[in-house]
Length: 361
Image 1 (tube, rainbow, N blue to C red):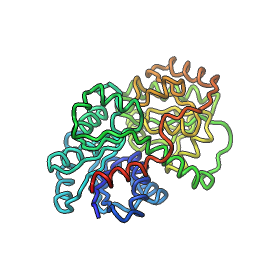
Image 2 (spheres, rainbow, N blue to C red):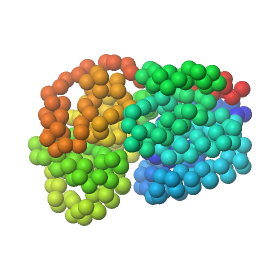
Image 3 (cartoon, rainbow, N blue to C red):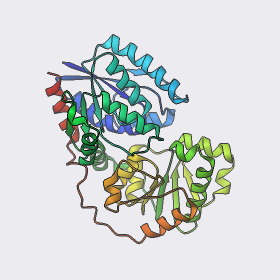
Image 4 (cartoon, rainbow, N blue to C red):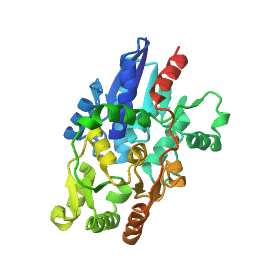
């Protein structure tokens, strides 16, 4: 039996891991050991995800959080290395573009252990984003690159990955598409019932929350939109702390925004499905909106999911009060088919498992 160490540390990684973890549990050729770095740790959020998504409890929880990038990544590497040396895995599996991803990738590279990267090849072409640096380095040291789209494959080719003959590059489709199908089929009907029309809004990225001007501009804009259409805002703990630092009584100031606690994945899918459209800066939520056949206004200058922008399902918007209002007005007039198939056939998990078994023989 081949042993895989999987490293997760953030909400999107829990969702992606849930698909493969469930398949590995039922496979007699693979064994998985989960490491939760604690990067985006919140007691309530973590309990929700591990319980409702049927993810096995991680064997290791490093509880490394709320630190600067360098310190966080270094501490993760130190702890992951100890575990890897003790467990002697055949492969390390990482997802996406977080500091947890980078830490796991560097440990695998240093210890000469095969590294598989799920969601490889994505690029925003903005090196000011920490996530961009994380994904570029992770791809470069990975042995197996599981790409979600043809655009991701093309990005790797443009960077010369065709010359790295030892690497295996595979378009598997998007693991998040698998997750949305699985949980929509099983869970959306059981989640909270929602009444009335609303726009779903959530943002958490550092370029929006750590910049007071951007943060205030977004809040003022969505509060203005909320005068005509209800805004539901499941507020991420990090975003909440940043808003409170500016104005502790923000709920009284922004009366047209319905701030609610963070949602589990199933309830989030339900909110997306029942919304008019979605406002976000989250990469995952951009796709989840598309999966649920909803338009998306993205509060960023770039996105990794260029196919959604090029096809008119996703509107990128600079952080400017008037531009956000203009984008909102435009999106409310648009009707789209959502017939395009950008992200595979919903069988990404099985494709990844089958490739891992072949490679690890």
